[in-house]
Amino acid sequence: MIRFFTLGILLFLCSCGAGDDQLLHKKWRVYDVVVPPGSGYDITQINQAAELKKGYYTNVFYQFLDNHLFIATIDNKPDSGMYKMLSGGKVISITANNGDRTYENLVSVITLDDKHFDMKVKSGDYYFILKTKAE
Image (spheres, rainbow, N blue to C red):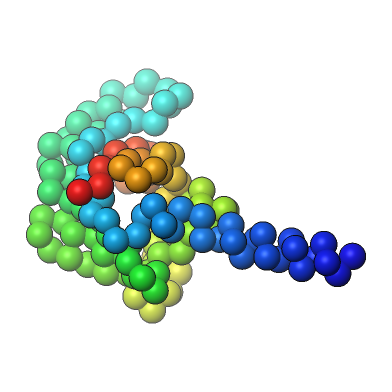
C-alpha cells in the first residue's frame, strides 16, 4: 500500500513539471488572436480579436525562465511575475513577483510543442486564443 502511495506522489511531482521543458528559455511571440472554437457567433468578440491582433498584441512576447520567473514584454516594456504549471500542464497560473494570487491570471494551454504555444486567455468579457511561436 505504501509503495502505491509513494509511486502516486512521485507521478504527481513529475506531472507538475509537464510542459516546463517546452516553455523554458524561449521567446514566445504572439502572431495571432482568435476566437476559441465552439464559441457562439458574437460580432463584438470577433471584432475585439481583430483589434487586439492589430493593436495590443502587435509587439508582445512571453518568456518562462528558471525559478518560475515569467516575463511579459509588451511594446518593448518588460514586466515580470511568477508562473506555476497546474493540472498536469493544462493550466498556467501567472501571479505577481511575490506569488500573491490576488491578481492571478489562469491561462489554459491549448497547444504546446517546441515551436508553438497557443493559450486561452480572458480579456474583458471574452475568451481569446493567443497563438504564439518560439523565436
